[in-house]
Length: 376
Image (cartoon, rainbow, N blue to C red):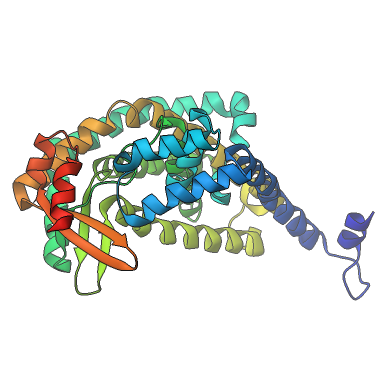
């Protein structure tokens, strides 16, 4: 009754126009996933562990991460601590994964795709199948033909940043959960699909042409970004000494994409909803309610495509791409591996060895040598 009253009468007691009514319904449609994401995030937190002993173990793991050391350095101590408070290995894995690959509201916004995938799966498959050859093309272009290393050289010359190596803190995680790490990467892949659709929707084409062109645009940018993200999931870090910053390459790529995609989505969505048919004709874009439903369908279709990319590319090709690009970085820059640690408020960045030696050792750290280095 209250909802009907708000739609029929505004705050001055006058009837609400049909356009305003459609706009209100469209906004409710768009925020519905947000209302669902909040309880899902609370449920995830409970599933990961909220009991006092879970929080105790979480704090122990956080201390290791805050110190800047890989979990493998304290694997035995952490396992012993878990046994003391009666935490099983599965719960250990959840807690550590939750700290290393945290799921936020943006991740839970995509969860309804699990419900609608039987309806959108066929359409997503039609896009995902030709997407794989495009990813292989960009892998050949960026990695095999060394286009990405040339981009890195240009970035290094422009910014004058130093390229170094810092061991990843997730090395040594208890029973690594590939699914959780894949979900952690998912939002960019999904929101890029919606971003591509909204950008192309401003071109002077009919609805069918907009869908076709946005699909082609989405496949190109997702293939390009996926190869770059896979290549930079490594120990390599940009050292911005002028601004006293360390920027992991993988984080740098996502930080470059995130604000542009996020601000672009908010601007394009709000503009289309407010102006509606003044911008575009046609039922898909002129009616705010149908436009909002289309936005959700595009978002969930892109999410399903993201799952296909994770299964077909990141699971099987990400590691060879990472190693190949890392070797190219070593050949070009010969970077040094550093250990960045914190102890009792004192920050240290200590040179360990060349990154080439680190790779020859299988990217494993000899902690006896580490203790000798720290004692010196």
